[in-house]
Image (cartoon, rainbow, N blue to C red; front, side):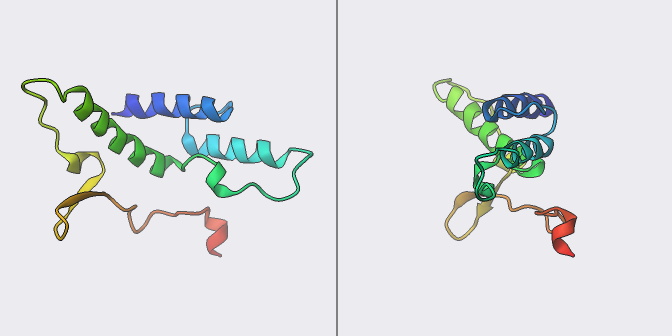
Length: 116
């Protein structure tokens, strides 16, 4: 799965025009600084215009990967038995539907300087 995430980082960073293609958080920072350096900038870029952080991006890739695996094997007589719980999904008992796993409680969603 690490190879899938690495390739996804390279592809997504390239789509955003980032030269940093090894870590999504570094690519996010590269894109932010590039936008902030624009002479035509009148306000700070909105965060929704940036790619996900490294941890969030990894979860997105896990969830997308199992979806693609299911779609690609949909017409097979004996598709692989993939457990969604290993790919960033959890079961909502009340609705009997899958929902994305929330980030861990100890994960910093913003840089440490914002918590001071």
